[in-house]
Image 1 (tube, one colour):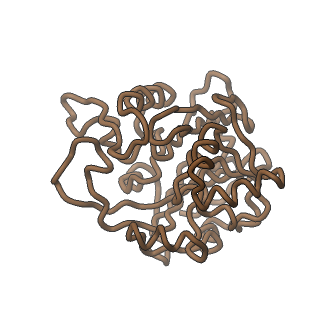
Image 2 (tube, rainbow, N blue to C red):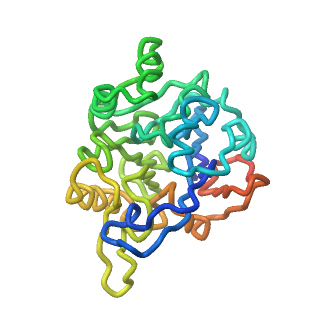
Length: 277
């Protein structure tokens, strides 16, 4: 029986992301659509968001216009598709500090945020605009630094650091959805450590190989090792790897298109939870 209900919720997209930024080495092959997505968990009396998107009404507009982000809708509208509100979010686990994953801090007034200390420190040194608000949240006790790998940050939920990969202190989230220490029901939320399924298998069924993402602050070699650790956590079952920027996730789990034209993916439901698909 699943401890958490899990939904992947698209909130915007980029229509023309270079393929070479998504899969390393695929140069001069054109562009493709890149969905922007966060993931909602409900269970154990908690409502948890994995990443928090971006705020178009704030300084996020500059980033969105620069990177041609389109069809943005607020968390109020996106979460309503699964019967939730921004005010109900208790906790947000931030995989890293890029604008499309951490730019929505102001939109969740009751949430406590969790990020790797190394990630926060690296971006504070560059004084990105989102960091100014993050420091204010730290003063209020609503931004908590994580020091490396942590088991049971919430019941059945672990975080794992992947240093010097996509960013300085990126992390991924392991959901042991039966609550067991050696779980038979694991999902792994990757953040931007993986963009596409091709990062896991290279697109060649007969000769699979890891191809890291094209955008990396740190080492591509470390990204390959991080990919392997993610795959091990998921028992090498690609369906169990939740990649928020991969539109093909809609083919893996039940999904529907919302009135705003976004996908809503229902990964699993806890006992007694209503389906929104």
